[in-house]
Length: 125
Image 1 (spheres, rainbow, N blue to C red):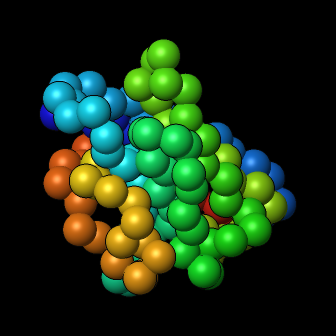
Image 2 (image 1 turned 45 degrees about the horizontal axis):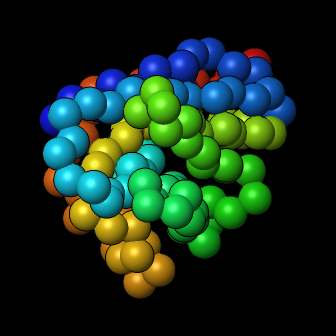
């Protein structure tokens, strides 16, 4: 299984970014693709997860509002739209595969199976 996150960069506060996660090699019919981030010197933070079966989405409570996850099934790509970027969003953003996203309802964000290289987002003026 391979995942590749892309789309990061330097953005001014208040700007927007759309991150992409291209994945391949999954052989199961149902899975989830999620995003998490790690800011310098901080712990990982779960952001969002989307189910392959029905597109149901899950968000960590602290990430509701400015983050939107979506998928493009025909391209095996999941996106993370981030709006109104803030300096505290500066982090490396990773995507990962999950057996199910349901665990996100219980605040379990890091029981992923595979993850890829992240993409760095820097929010600064």
